[in-house]
Each structure stands twice: as C-alpha cells, then as structure tokens.
Image (cartoon, rainbow, N blue to C red; front, side, top):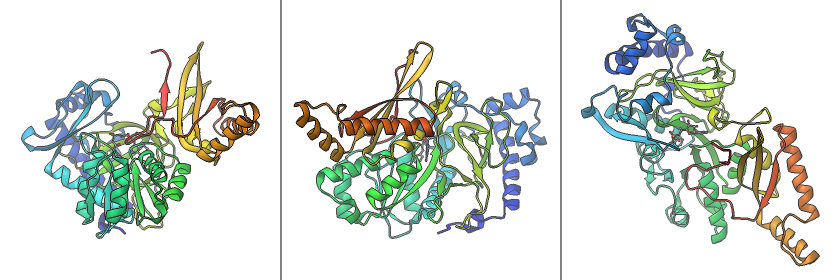
Length: 448
Ligand code: DLL
C-alpha cells in the first residue's frame, strides 16, 4: 500500500524541483548555523545564495564520518540544544560514537518515513509488530517503534535478545510482523527448532530486516524457513536511522529511497565524481528537511546502484540495490575485491551447510588470505559423524569422503563465482556465535 502517493508517486520532474528548492534552503540553513559548513563553503568559494537547485549539487563539499567525530558530540547540530528532543549514536568499533540529535519535527518525519516503509512492506493497522531491533542508542528499536505506532499497528517493544521469549510472544500474541536484523531472525528460527516450534505454523507473515548486509540467497533461506515475506530496509543513524529506504512487497527488487527527504547520489569512491544513474558506486546522501543535524553530501561508504526505472508498485522514488557491503568491509584478496555477502551467496547454494558463517582474514607475507568457516546442517553433520565413527572410531568431520567432496565443490564455486581461492573449514552445528543484533561476519587477524 502506498501511504503518501502525493509524494511517493510524484512525477520525477516535480520531485527534482522540490529537491532543488529544499537543497537551496538547506545550504542557507547550515551556512548560518553550523561553523564547519560555513568554513567549508567559504573555503570552496561558494556563496550559499548562489545555490539554486540540483544543478549546483556536484560543486558542494562532501561530509565525512570524521567530521562528526571531529566535532563530537554536538558540533554539527544546526538547532539549539533546547530544540533537540532525542539523541542517538551509532556504536562504531573504536573511539567515540557518532552522535546525532533530532528535533521534534525530525522525529515526526522519521516516524512518517518508517510508517511509509512498513506500509510498503505490506503492513497496516491490525498488524501486530514484534520489534526485535535493539532499543537504545541504536536507531533500530525506537525507529521501528514510532513507525509502527504511526501506522496504527500494535507494536510489541521486546527489543533484541531474549530469543525464547521472542518465540513465546510470537505464539501467544500472534505477531504478524517481525522487525529484526536478518541474522537475528535466523537465530530465532534456530531456537524455534530446538524448542520444537514450527514457525510456518505461526501467524507471522512479514519480516522487515536490515541494519546489516544480507544476500538475496539469505532472503530466500529466511522466507522459506520462517514462511514469511522478507523485506529489506536500510538506513543509517547519521541520516536518520531505519526508513531511509525500503523495498516494496510488490516487487522486492530494490529499496525505494524516500527522495523527498533524502537526496541520493552515487559517486566514484576514489575520485568523488558523480556517476550517472544505474552505475555502481558509493552512496551519498543529503538530508533535505532535517533540522537537528542536517548533512550535506554525506559519504555513507555503502556501495550500491540507483535505478530510476518505473516500479510495478507505482512509486516513482528511485530504488537502490541491496547494499552488498560498506567500502570499508571490502576485502582485497590477491587483488580481487570481495564482499562478505558474496561469499554468503555462494555458501547458501549448498543445502548441506547452514547459513552461519564467518570469514577470517590473515596476512601471509604481503598477501591477505581468506578462511571461511561454515556450519554443517545438523543432518549432514550427524551423517558424517556416523560414517567416520564407523570407519575408525574417531569423530573428525574433516575425514569423510563425502565431506571432502563437498568442500571441494564449495571452494570451487567460490573460486568460479567470486574469483578467490579460500581455505574452508566445516564447523559443528551451533558453534559459530549467533547474533542478536548486527552479525560479525569478518574476523580480521591481520597485524594492525
Ligand atoms: O543500522 C539503521 C537501521 C536499523 C537500518 C534497522 C535498518 C534497520 P547504523 O547502526 O548507523 O544504522 O548503521 C548503518 O548499516 O551504513 C550500512 O552499512 C548498514 N546497513 C543498514 N541497513 C542495511 C541493509 C542502522 N538493509 C549502516 N543492508 C549502513 C545492508 C545495511 N547494510
């Protein structure tokens, strides 16, 4: 269902005009209120009054994550602290968190963007939304919460973790929608198996999954196991949180960007040059309406492509491809660029392995080498164990002929499809750490 057809199905010419007007107003606002932007525009010799529309975009300076760090905590806020009603932060692996502030108007827009997203996932009043995104500094929990309420659905604020209780409430309350990271959704399924619960029997109908990269193969796996539609939702705290873009249930083919509020561009990450529609590169966002912490041409590091072809759902907003990974997560293995999600797609081609894996990157000499650890399904593991036990009384999952053949097949697929040679280790079921939030897919053992 299209919640706001006046915007979501706008003629693209009208949309561009609206974006241009909003961009001009934004540049004036940040020049007035944010010292970093005043300095940066002055340094670039740009008079804010000369910015009239989208044609001026490419000459405007970028904003980087480090700008938020350098002005930590509130230096990039464009509204006085009295007008900030909420503060969130993204974890970041090292150092200080990236901190963002919202005015009441920002929270209102965010709730509306999330309501739009949920509507596009096929959710409506009467749905029971089990919100298993973490509540806290992370934007997932409160973002989905406000969106669900705005839509008029019944929201269960269970937050992440508590997997058995998730299942209990799903059964008792009859939840129809699950909001979670895709890796947590799979973990919930694992636990359901161990509790003897068949998730296909539950009223659960839709999953709204995001906050981490996941492949289309993973989507199929989740849809089949949980017997639901799995919808991809994207966002980042710097720009707002979840709801920057979301798939429509009709096409499930790219995430519609809420372009009346977020201006998306694709650039060449090395040169910063704008790339034409349809080319892959780094996603850059300008917030067109944000008051608390508006950002100009923010470099997300996320790699994707924009598609402005009309969509069967009737929305005219551009669709971004599912994000295959962040440029900082890209591994370079003997000169080949590899995203963890590409390995994931190949692993999931083999039904003998479970969708639980980790990549280990190590340095040998001057080369990076990649190890893949993946769990066998319990059935395959048990069969292999029996075979090996019968052979020589030892449990050694590496030694059966069938497993060696399987290993050679998967390694061959990775070589053929991704283009890298990896070492592959099979793991016993339930030995790779499960995630209740964002999964950690890469263990980097390279010397720093
Ligand atoms: O992850 C916001 C969010 C919450 C999105 C719930 C969707 C659902 P951050 O913690 O700031 O915000 O992390 C943002 O996560 O730049 C991407 O690299 C990655 N990411 C988010 N959604 C997706 C997705 C939230 N659907 C960073 N696919 C982003 C791939 C995603 N990567």
